[in-house]
Image 1: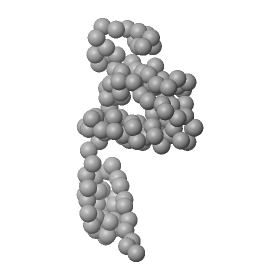
Image 2: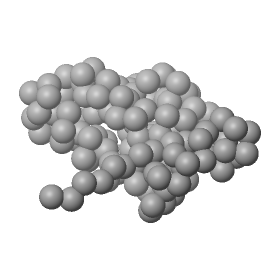
Image 3: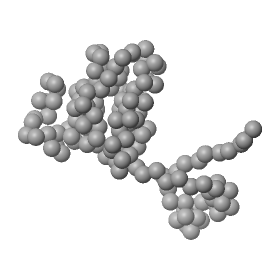
Length: 134
């Protein structure tokens, strides 16, 4: 049986070692294979695939079968910069799933800060409240 360990960080370990804030010996033990994954804000096209995966997992948790997400809601998700990366996306989708009583998650089910940001970035002249009437 193979034994391996996966570790992750959003910090720059090389700089932390230079500042004596991270042990060099531990770094070399852990850094066998290094994979850098860009922040979610740099790979917005992944949001649709991630959404599908997260939605499928969360639907079974809440017994909310056959829910989908509207194209407009996906566009809103792509407007956001995702400071919490996939973890934040997962929380947003879970919240929308809980709030949505219909079969389709709409932009109105997303957090208000995401709704406002998307409208501000290019809502095409629409007012914020217009998006509640999809």
